[in-house]
Image (cartoon, rainbow, N blue to C red):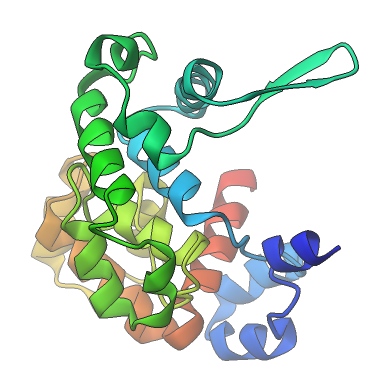
Length: 233
């Protein structure tokens, strides 16, 4: 019961959060469609490695990479006639051989995951301790890790470290912001980011900063409502 309460963030005051982010007709429609949607509180290590694997990959490929890591480096658990595998600990991956990691089909992510695993395993960075520092400090710490860019950092901050003001921007969120909130940007900026699928770090920061400033301390909730609504409309 405690795990469920914690994981689904039942301690969040959802009515208060909704009233704070309910700024316009777009977010209002998203809230009406998906009222009750909550952000999960994931385990930071699992969240970090999962989002590192997610870079430039679709969901089936991400699931396969994580399954490969768990099967090769995790612990097997038998449940009746089914077998499951735990997520590998930082030390499990830190001690892995590069050839074995490559068999998990992580592509260019292999060395980054290996290096990050060693940093976390050695105690050079305490992920859970980042819950106790402010958003900016925690973000800087995450960005110091190999293979962690602004989007991965914001996802980890939002989904595992309790920084509800984090506002991750992916292809979907870029479309949403440019479609619903163009008046907050210059025409040249809109034209530039519309031309390409990916964002430069500077463009990412501008879009993400808009979300944080416009929606406030619960911007991450606004992001999730808008994202889910747009994906399923």
